[in-house]
Image (cartoon, rainbow, N blue to C red; front, top):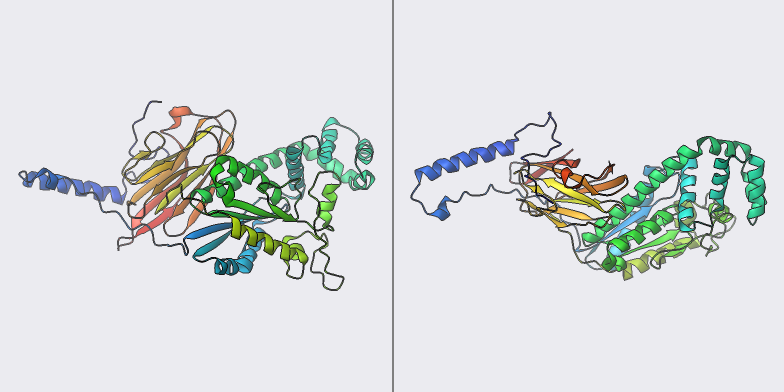
Length: 475
């Protein structure tokens, strides 16, 4: 590959971006002053003549409490709003954070949603069956229904086939009303396409979150509910493939699992009267129920389906709560703290993607340095993790005492691949804030010709607060 000349500014800078920032003006002014000084002091030694570097800002004002860090993620099920996933994550924080940190000296636990975007009940259900088909290509009866719809079979023929092919099939066939089958037939192609697209994006997003935390020396503990178990199985398996030396630093506990298996020895709890899982079991291979979760007629907090995460499993009156407590405690005790691979500081940008071979992270620094795979060392930061075999991650960071005023433009180039790819970029700042992951759709690979024109992800402007500390503005 032929190295390219680094441009003075990121190639995606728009006309609304001032061509010269205040920081660059100051830099030019300082340069002229130094030249004048050099002329006036022509007999001074070469060491004294060397121009002094512009003073860096103090870029880190946030200090993580505890040196041993664990990221706890809640992976939600179908038909869940982000606000509800956040409530579940916040509930886990309120129930477990203090307890876990008190049991482990010098530790901290952070709680986040690993959100599975809902596109509506019907699309989400089809997505589940797509995931089950991936688990067992020959065992998904539900997908057989979709195949028959696409083949143009009548509703009666579909019901008759299902009734014969499945144990308790007559019960299932009765749920396949004309209204439901007609709706599925009319919208099947688009729904299936939307569901598959979302499935790929969520898998990429979750695996990126987990790999990023591990690279940064943090353990990953996931609590998965319902469909979240299917996403978690895929993401955890992918992360272990990406970072095999970190396989003992990531783990999860499944709740109301529709999966056929667990990954990496994960535990789970599913009630024997969970109606959602019971219905799915009529057509799919599902892990067996492993608890009688009925508290009795007069003290039952569960929803009608006995399936909801908070009311039907996490409630302290239920036996399942003890199982969840034990599962989380076991992971907290046994997961290893990973070694720090990726640097962090005032600025940290990470990139992950899907199965295509190579997507590259690019950063244009305020002084004009272009940091990427051919030039991993910049004036301020370093590309310290690079990947060329799919998934990522890649990592760029600027140390706390090395950040400069001006603009850092962060983007990606689809270097090599044969299909549309999704890149996820996350930006972490030294004041404790996080932006992203931002997902970028990449259509055609560009090779080295795309190095000078990467697709923009973030534009980060750093300024001085007047006391030598960095102020951040992100677009």
